[in-house]
Length: 82
Picture 1 (tube, rainbow, N blue to C red):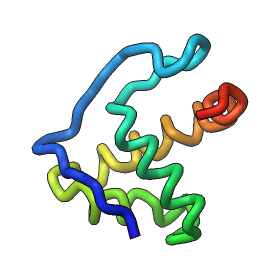
Picture 2 (picture 1 turned 135 degrees about the vertical axis):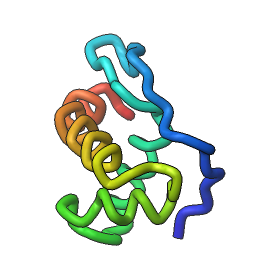
Picture 3 (picture 1 turned 90 degrees about the horizontal axis):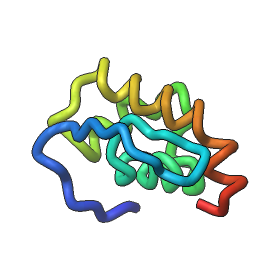
């Protein structure tokens, strides 16, 4: 199971994750989702609720936005070796 330090609130960023990928949230959320996927904890439709278990300060709406952006940027981030 993951052992993560939890942020106090959702962190919104508009920064370059890699050269070609602009992420909207803190990279820690994306790393957590990568780990959830690798470990087979849930499918990605259940990922927002699992993400909320790791980060209880985020709402379901924000968790869905994070997962949506994670899915949108997944292939590019994986191609870049992340």
